[in-house]
Length: 94
View 1 (cartoon, rainbow, N blue to C red):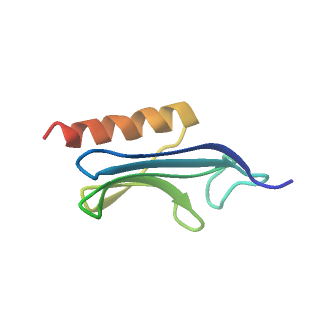
View 2 (view 1 turned 135 degrees about the vertical axis):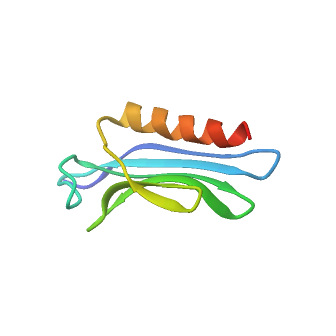
C-alpha cells in the first residue's frame, strides 16, 4: 500500500505570507510516532517559518513556534489543524 494524500492546501495572502498544509496517510507509522500520518503545516512570513507543525523520522511529532522547537502531542488530524490555525491566528493578531 502506498501513502495516500489526505489534504493539500496552500494560500498566499496579500501581505505575501504563506500558509501550507499537507497531510498523508501512511501504510506504516513514521518512527517514533504510533499514528499512520505524515504531515507538514507551515506559516511563513517574509520568507521565514513562524509556525510549523510536522513529524519526521527520528524526531516524531513536533512544532516550531517563533524559532523554537517543541514536542507536540498528536491526537487527530482535525485537532492538528485546529492547533496550527490557533497558533497562526495568535501571530497574525500581533
